[in-house]
Image (cartoon, rainbow, N blue to C red; front, top):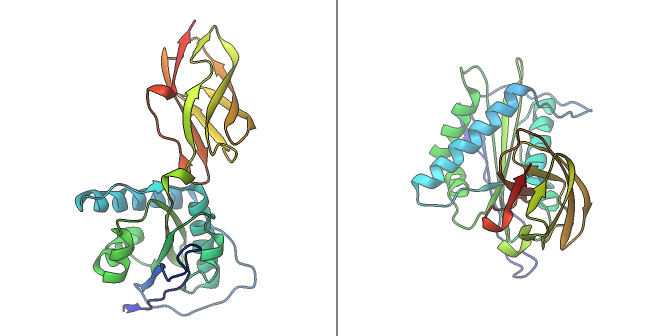
Length: 260
């Protein structure tokens, strides 16, 4: 059994007009049960299903000549919590506060929710249902969206709930690395790396190849990293920083050289 419940709402601060695209998809009918204590379920299988939905989504966009969406940890958190809430309540519905939970600075946002139970891959069924529904499909291939967060929550009795939260952010809102103060590290052990850029004050994680990294002092235009260089470290490693809107891009300016 299938039913649809399209909704819309939300305004951009600048233009004060409706920009939200939100639709709901119910794939299999079940009785509704409400819990007084919603929980977030994120089993390893749910994380795998979430990653598969991201791959399917970006493959769909690529097939339509569109750029892939950047996975935002902040949007993923919103989506994951809402999927868990739906599972604990046993009902498919939109998040009434999603607009206020999406990180500030957005120009447009959208939401897809779906549920399925009893299939060999519930998330595959949900994805195909979204693709087959014009409203959901429009969200998935909207050319203006730049970021996405996907959440999946499931149980043997409750089935699988999936949520997609889309958003549009200008490139100026994303963190960006402009240079590394020390682009070459010598020796092994813990070493200091100073990264200069823009919008770095909310950086909460960093990657330097496969080395251990600690974020020490994030500021708007500078962040200090502690990197543990090992004897097996490669000679050239990319430095990447993660903020609520996703990871920074890589370039020649983000290459760290190791001299042992």
